[in-house]
Amino acid sequence: MITSVLVANRGEIACRVFRTCRELGVSTVAVYSDADADALHVREADTAVRLPGAAPSETYLRGDLVVKAALAAGADAVHPGYGFLSENAGFARQVIDAGLVWIGPPPEAIEAMASKTRAKELLGIAPLTEVTEADLPVLVKAAAGGGGRGMRVVRELGQLAGEVAAASAEALSAFGDGEVFVEPYVENGRHVEVQLLCDAHGTAWALGTRDCSLQRRHQKVVEEAPAPGLPAALEASLLDTAVRAAKAVGYVGAGTVEFLVAGGRAQFLEMNTRLQVEHPVTEEAFGVDLVALQLAVAEGRALPPEPPAPRGHAIEARLYAEDPARAWAPQTGVLHLFELPGEGRTRLDTGYASGDTIGVHYDPMLAKVIVHAPTRAEAIRKLAHALDRTRIHGPVTNRDLLVASLRHPEFADPALLGTGFYDRNLDALTEPRTGEEYAAVAAALAGAAARRSRFGGGWRNLRSQDETRTYGDHEVRYRPARDGGFEVTAPEGVRVVAADPARVRLEVGGVVRDFGVAAYGDGIVHAGPHRLAVRPRFTDPREQTAPGSLLAPMPGTVVRVADGLAVGDRVTAGQPLLWLEAMKMEHRVIAPASGTLTALHAAPGRQVEVGALLAVVSDDATTEAAQEDQTV
Image 1 (cartoon, one colour):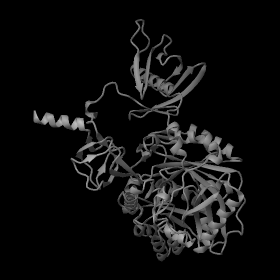
Image 2: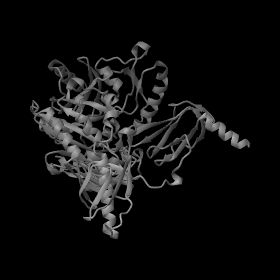
Image 3: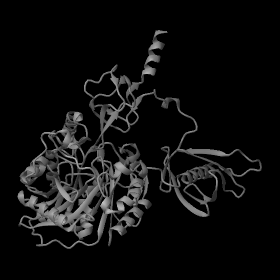
Image 4: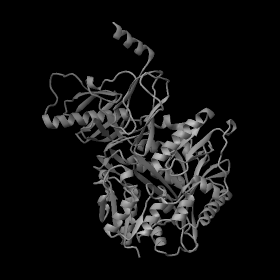
């Protein structure tokens, strides 16, 4: 029997595994980097072992240090979670050779499926070797790893070589393996997968299907089980193929086989030899605990001959600290408040709590919110409502996008599901929420009430000039009222029902709106579900930058600069100049306009903070004017 489990991971998945271990009476051990010293998964573990350093390559990717930590803490088993070393056959062997129980598939099965090219060969699928115009568009894809890293869509043949090189470099950095391959790119196909669970006695469960079609940057955002609207014959074929793939490599444990479905046909993508991020929707649909079953299989126990029958529908949404309106740029900072309503009715899998800091070293996912209901329509409504009422104070998140996505008519119709959802709808989905102008009023009045409580003051016989506050694009004007409250003069049609530093009630068009208001001294005010940036009355001249300045959109590391790029070079609008890596994502920094590169401050390996000057591209008129000034 397993008595103590070390989770070779961090954040949400470590907390998730710990939860099941506690329920089973199994002790828990965490490992942590210096950046995670006070992380939630460390606080929740019975024992924790430090891995010196901050970068994944120094910590969570060091299998030797993880095994050493397990032995030092007295653990008798290791659970890899997902990501990091979870699909590393060498690490699995290190664990087994140390006399520890490996809660995962045999190393040989990991090796057989670790390379997507080799996995395709096992199933008799030939890769695309000679690409012609007729094959376009194609997808360049890393043979190892996942999560959208080392993946590029190519629509013009002339771009293929450059994208292959870029994908290979990213894959090498992310997975230590630069192998890439090319396959046909299916426009707006559905991403459907099958959850597997196999024991060492020959039983293989195919626990239904999941649909993971809502994706950004080839990474999943919303997942559900079962995949809705699949023809029965197609679904049966997917389940059969998944079981066949597992049995071909002697698979044991939890795993997932992924497909792209289009035109009633399925294209095999890969097999993931680990627990998936989206495993909770399968758990909710089948009423099982996959982590508990993983431990049981690792202990040598046999599964029942048949899996339980599914019931109802489950949907999961991934909450990310990112800005969908700014190319999904990851965000960092203090998560001042994080509260999900309806505890007990909605499942929250997270690695963060109120007061935690979102750093730059790891994936920006905050949490997964999961619901279950008798029907898909009821599950959609329930999840959208839960997300809408979740209070998140701190960095920008994708919460509003998730709510709008779930309520979009295209998502409601399974026949319209596809990976191109955000390509078609992102602009509309990222428009400001309705009522933001009234949230700005609430923010202004809460601030005024706070100042009044600190310094006193109120209505005077002589009418004073209106106070003005601006939040984003919304200007608010107000003045003290005779009754001790406030009168709003802009926007029009707003009556103040009550106002104090933490809560403001407004009547607009006969409807009373209630706003909880909070500020944390960082230039942001949270009013109800709205996040408002305070616009200062006067511009700080130190914040002015030269035209054409390229500033780091987020803190991160410069991983590459365009080959041969140097000051004085001519560049064209949209030309990639350099690449930043932040929070497990790679971001291209492009020339904002055609002109001359007049400054380059970026170099591979350089750590930059948000707003750091990376380069300057001067247009022709600016360059000529500067040259004239120098000759005067």
